[in-house]
Length: 221
Image (cartoon, rainbow, N blue to C red; front, side, top):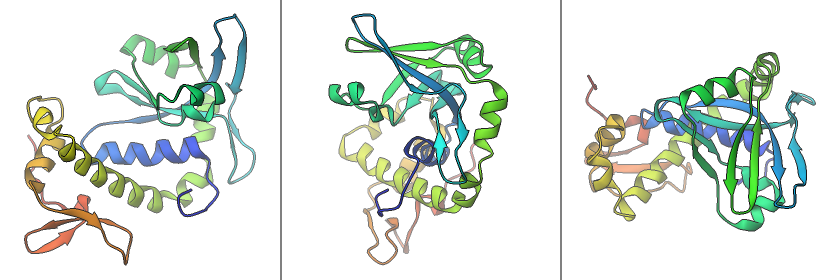
């Protein structure tokens, strides 16, 4: 999208973000869902079907989110595609989703709702057959290399943001993200910037600049 190419925003964003989480050692799973917005007057508007599909090889009908099973989280990076949610200007949805709820949503058995101001965002389950058909779409395989490259760049920019915001020290105080902590230690205060020739985000370690996935990190136990 940044380069002016047509994109299916939710599936593209979730795929790239999934790979970016992997750079930090965080497992993430893409999950198709239906989306219904409930307003405070009792009205409900469906924005995404609970029977998602590929209209053609490049156009998806539906919506996707990410599950972070090891951290009991639901992440919806593109919920602001919904006009009512976008008007609130509160950014992506990041909510707690315990294992029983996560499994029920994944198995197509029950909805899960998130409050956002005076709106209720209902994520409706998608039957496994629809989920599997969506996630086997040719667009995902064809663009996989670009997704991975974009994810590495995104994760490198996140490392810079962690340092700028003073969050790196807080991350090191928890044992929940061992690979991310190892990356922060390996990178230290090395400059991070965009290579104007390749548009890759590079970390200028002693000796040579490298991409985030090239940073030498000790093998974790």
